[in-house]
Length: 220
Length: 347
Image (cartoon, rainbow over all chains, first blue to last red; front, side):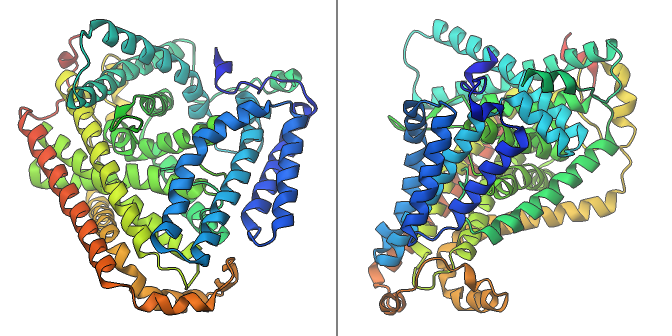
C-alpha cells in the first residue's frame, strides 16, 4: 500500500545500498552544482546532466517514469520562465528563462533520483541522525501514516459522491461540493486523531517516541 | 506555487531558509510549551489532511484545475503554531515523495506557504474578527480575507525575492510581475472560496473544532484532558496582541505591495545600489548585454497603460470578489459564538 508513492524506493540496486548520508550528499552536491552553473557554461551543464543520467541508470529507474514526471513538471516551469522573454523579448530575457529551465530540470531530476532511492522510513532515520527535533519527527512519522488513511477515506467519499450524482454538477456546485468534502474530511480526520490519541494514551504513551532504529538499519 | 531550485539565487535561498528556520523553531517552541502530548497526533493528522485535501480538484477550465493550499485552514483549526508546523511538514513530504519544490528553495516555500499562510493568515483573521466579531460570521469572514491576502502576500514576497535573485539590470521585470500578480489574485480568490466554504461547513457541523485563543484543539470526546489545553490560556495578552496586529499589518501591506510590484522597477536603481554595496553583484550570472539597456528607459506607452489596467483589474476585481464572498458566506451563518461544550458534538 505505502509503496505506490515512492515506487522504486525498495529496489536493491547499488544506489539503494549506499549509506543514506552518501545519497543525500550526492544529491545535494549535484543540485548545488546545477543551480550555480551559468547557462553559458554549456559543457559543465552537459556534464551534470550526464552524471544525473548515470546515477538514474545505476539505480535502475526507468526512463519512461522520469519522462512522465517531467511531463507534469515542465508546464508550470515553462509558463513561468517563458513569460519573461515573451513579454519582453531580447537576448537577456531568453538567456534567463533558459537558465531557469535548465537548472530547474537538472535539480528536479536529481531530487527525483534521491526520492526514488531513499524510502521514507530511511529518510526519517537519517533526519533523526541529523538531530531534527524529536517532536517534529514524531509528527512527521504520524503524518506519513495518516496520509494513506485519509487518502482512502477521501477515495470512499469521492465514490459515494459519484454514486449519488445523477447529472454533472455546475461549476459552482463542484466547487461547493469539493470544499464541503474537505470540511467533512477535516471533521473525520480530527475525530480519528482524537481516537488515535486515546489509543496511544491507553498504551502508555508519554509524549516521547521510541524508534526502531536498529531494525531500520538491518533492513538496508 | 512551489518554487523550484534554480529560480532563486543561493543568497536568497540562504536568507529565506534562515527566516523560515527561525519561524519554524519558534512555532515548535510555542507548540511545546502551550500544550500537552495530544498535539502530536493532532498536528500529524492536520498535515495529512492538508496533503490529502490538495488532491481534491477544483475545476477552472477544461484542462486546468486548482487545489487548496491550506495554510489558513490549518491555522484556523489547530492554531498558528501547530498550523505552521503542519504546513512545513506538508511541504517536506511533497518534496520527499514527489520532489515538488526544490531542496534549496525549501526555505522560500516554507516562508511563502507555511509562515505567511499560518502565522500571517491567523494574524489577519484575528484582526478582521476584531471588527466583525468573534462569532461564526467573524471567523468565516476573517478566514476568507486571510486566505486571499496570504496568497497575495506570498506573491509579493516572491516578486521581491525574484528581483533580488536576478540582478540583471537590462531586464524589465514589471510585466512579469504584473502577470504573476494577476495569476495569483485568481489563485487567491480560489483559495479564499475553498477555505471559506470548508470552514463554514465545519462551523455548522462541529463548531467546537475551531481553534480558540489560548486553548488547543478543542477535541471533543476526551474532555478529561482539558486541563492541558486550557492551562496556559493566560498568556501576556498585551504584548501578543501588539505583535499580532503588527504581523497582520505586515501581511496586509505585503498583499497591497503585490499590486505595486509591477511598478517597482522604477526603484531598480536604489535596489541595485544596495545590492552592489552588499557585494551581491557577483551573483549576476547572466552576461550583461549593453545594447538592450537603452530600450529599458522608453517603454512604449500603450504597453505601460495595459499593464496598469491589468493590475488594477486584477486587484479591484479580486478584492471585490473576496469581500463579496466574505459577506455572502458570513450572511448565511447565524452569528452565534463558538462554544467549547461537549454537548454540542452530539456524541
